[in-house]
Length: 266
Ligand SMILES: NC(=O)C1=CN([C@@H]2O[C@H](COP(=O)(O)OP(=O)(O)OC[C@H]3O[C@@H](n4cnc5c(N)ncnc54)[C@H](OP(=O)(O)O)[C@@H]3O)[C@@H](O)[C@H]2O)C=CC1
Ligand SMILES: O=C(O)C1=N[C@H](C(=O)O)C[C@H](O)C1
Image (tube, rainbow, N blue to C red; front, side):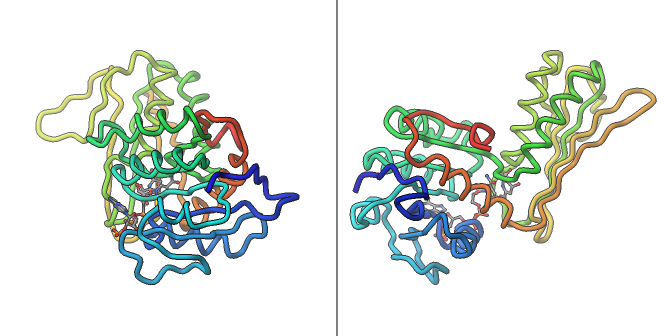
């Protein structure tokens, strides 16, 4: 069923379908939505339903879930690149806004970035590699530092739990893009170092660590010859991502078709 112009006000809560519902983020989204008045998870989709922590319909197919519900305002997706590519197309076919936090989209065989662009021709689409407000602030600080410290070496390091599939993290790649936009002299991404590997002036170092249950940490180090500046963010739990994604979904529903960023809606 097509989306309403739901905005969480006069018509009641913004009605959401969550994909990847049995995943770490899917469960977090349902928990966070349960504590809010402005959003309601009406259906939870996962290819292996298991025990979904939502007072919602549970199914294995997004297409069927969208057809079954009276109305849906947005799909919120935290899955995997191939699933995101498929789900973006299904949301667009149903005329429903699509919010995704899935990372590892760049260069994937399923062309999820192309699928998001195609969906955005008919519905509002928002992809963010990180839905925490702290990372949004870090991005602003990093751009300022990158312009203020010309010629400084830059190294980006991220740490995540041992269940993460993609490396480096989507957030780390976003931070690298932000730095590259301010520092066109940094043309090489150096992913780790091994053996004889002297540093080149054109490098941004990018380092990924995987350990235990770390939710997500990002650090950007700017180093000159006599000083260093380190800017970092640590997520305490996945609730910060879930709250940001729900805020984004509530703000995106009812907007014109097109691509949106998290910062557009903050
Ligand atoms: N933007 C942000 O703020 C954040 C982004 N993320 C990103 O979100 C994504 C999910 O993270 P997380 O919840 O930790 O991952 P999990 O592995 O815990 O969950 C992934 C979910 O997606 C489902 N899934 C995986 N592959 C497919 C597929 N091919 N078709 C359908 N469903 C599929 C899984 O189902 P099944 O159980 O059957 O495998 C599971 O329900 C990652 O890309 C991660 O980097 C994570 C946190 C914050
Ligand atoms: O997989 C995760 O957990 C996270 N993924 C995102 C990323 O790749 O940047 C965001 C966050 O750091 C947690």
